[in-house]
Length: 245
Image 1 (cartoon, one colour):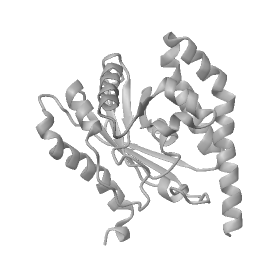
Image 2 (image 1 turned 135 degrees about the horizontal axis):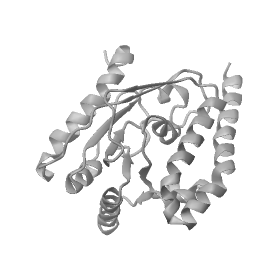
Image 3 (image 1 turned 60 degrees about the vertical axis):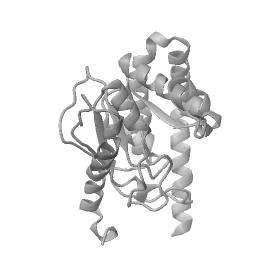
Image 4 (image 1 turned 120 degrees about the horizontal axis):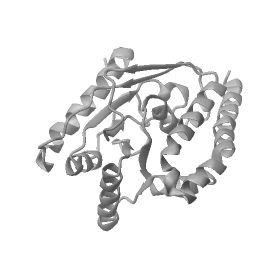
C-alpha cells in the first residue's frame, strides 16, 4: 500500500508543478506589468483547481457568510500541508497576497514568482519585520487582501493547533481591517507535513465570518488571537473529535 501512496505523491507533485509551469508565462507577464496584478486572482484559481482535479480530490466548501469583494481582509488559516496555499485559493474569492518565510523565495521555479507577488517574512530581524508590516499594510490599503498562517510553519501534530503568532493581528489592527478565519479541515490527511505519501480524502474548507478590528489596539491582540484560534479549532473538533479526547 505504501508503494502506491508514494506513486500517488509523485503524481500529485508532478501535477502541482505542471500547473505552475503551464501558467508561469502568464504569472511572469503579471510581474513585468503590475497593472495586470488583479489577473493573478484567476491564475491562482486555475492552478488550485487544476491541482486538486488532477489528483482526483473532491472539494467541499462552506462559507458562513458572503464577503464583500470591495473590502480587504486578513485571512488566517491553520497550516498542515504544502497544499494549503492552493487550498485557500479555492474558497477565497479575492486575490490574496500571502506572507511566507523567506526560504520560499529560494525554491526552484516557484521562488521567483513568490517573492515578486507575495511578501517574504525574515524572522528574527526587527528591521525586516517592520518592513514586512509596512508592505502588508500597503497591500491592504491598495485593495489586496492578505493570507497568513499564524502558526508560522507547517504543523507536525495536526489537527491540534500550535500557538498562533502575533503578526497577522498586528497587521490587521494597524490597518483596521477585518480578520477572516479559515479552517482547512482535511489537507493534513491528504498530504501531511513531511510525509512521503499522498492520501485520497475529500478536501473540506470552511470560511468563517469576519471579525472586526475597528477601534482595537495592540493590547487587544491576545483576545483576538484566542478568538480566531477557537473558531478555526472548533471546526476541526467537529470533524475529528477523537483527536481531542
